[in-house]
Length: 113
Length: 111
Image (cartoon, rainbow over all chains, first blue to last red; front, side, top):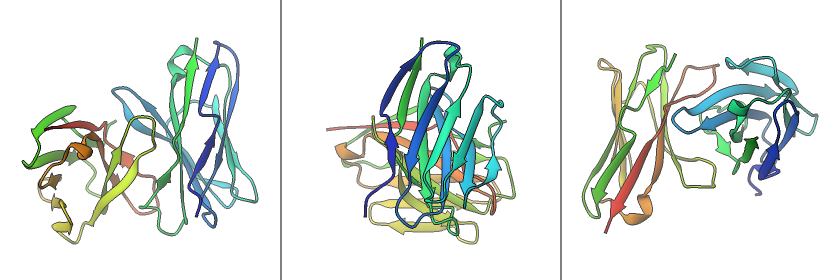
């Protein structure tokens, strides 16, 4: 079974631009969660989608948004990028009924210059 | 507001010895706890978990202990191996809500 796939692996943007990150969950998984990892801050929850609906949301500004498609693939968008948005963005999938066991992708490393 | 705290950013242990990683939480509603392991340039991988109705769960070299009254859990690795060198994240869950992660502890196991 293929794991969680995130694209791209690396991304360099400049302040003010916007970015879209993609995540393909494990086949059969209906829940996709997004986390931001920065040095010293651990993994901070952004949002979770289940069957195309946002089910949970963390404490991030509205510049961070996401969506999920009917095939469970998910995208995350960040608009008006700031230097502080530089981070590793991790996507995790689960069946949605057993949310404890999240399976993570390798992440997208975003650098904002 | 950090509800899951890992107060030791790093830990160094000799190969063959016991590694003890600690985690504290503040939310008494948490009912499920997990440990994840992360290597550089990879996503975290699930290691071991424990339900709040238990106080210990063991899986090979890894044992997690839960002290609900102290809101404290720990991960014991015995014996430690160089391949265990990684960042370990403690996480806690309240049913229906997202996983809360700590900031991680970087474990270095030296030969």
